[in-house]
Each structure stands twice: as structure tokens, then as C-alpha cells.
Length: 167
Image (cartoon, rainbow, N blue to C red; front, top):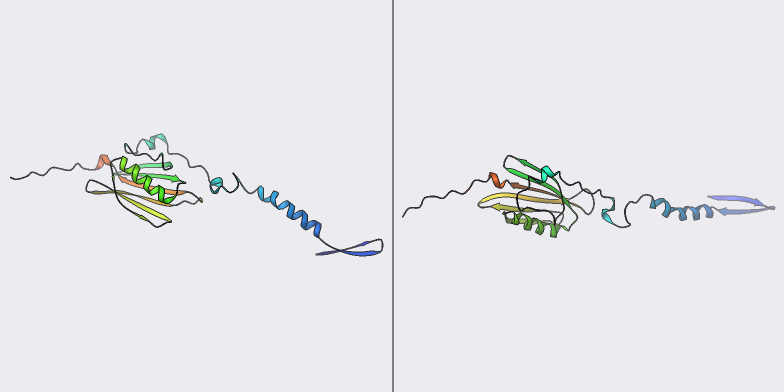
């Protein structure tokens, strides 16, 4: 846009340089109002996950801890299964190993893993039973992973019976 200004009988064409300069100078101020948290921190706009209620945490099998993994947000016990939901900011490769360690500490055995880079599954056994799996997927919030861990309730697993032997 060009403005024609007449001053002292002379006509001057002024591009709206002043307006452009002011606009450019104002951009950092305008954009600063759009950010929360600290600069380039990917998690700055992510809400902190709410921890599961103490009554839910009491349902977690003995020895199983997600303290090194992330925040347990929900625990459910239905029939013969325990389902834990959690959120973590640790890298996917690290999370799968930490889940194996946590579940092993609770008496389960790792039975395999499938890590595709954008999600992973970790499988567990208890004795001769397929006893559960953890599924780790990208969360809605960048930099976070959602974990869904489903295990056979150790109290619901029948004890192995000893078969009589013949001699």
C-alpha cells in the first residue's frame, strides 16, 4: 500500500514502512502470549498426569512398582485381571525395559516384546500361563507415552497341582 503525502507543495510517496516496522517489532510480544512453560520444552503445555487414588494403588500386585517408569493414573481389578494405566516421558526403548524389570520384580516372567518405534508390546507369563501384556503408545501430548498394563491377578492363578507318579 502506498500513501501519497503532500508537504510544502511536494508530493511524497511513502510505503507503509513505519507500520511494517512496528508490526515486525510487535510479533515477539504477540507470540510470547501463546506459550506456556519454558521455551522449547515439549512437555511445557502438557498437564501433569493425576496419580491414581490410594484405594486403586492398593490393588497393584505386591512387588510391582512404576516408580522408575512414570505416573500410575488408574488401577482396576476385574474378575481375574488387574489393569494399570500410566503415563511416562521416558523414551520408548527405555520404558519397555523398565516395564520388564517392574513386572519381573512382582513374580512374572517376560515372554517377549514387539517394539515398532511408535508403539510397543511387552508380554508376560506366570508359570505356564500367558499372564499379561503391556502396550505402550504415543500419548496425545507430545513427549509422553500412555501405558496399558494388563496382568492376570496372582491371587486368581490356580496353584499347579502335583500329579501322582508311578514307580
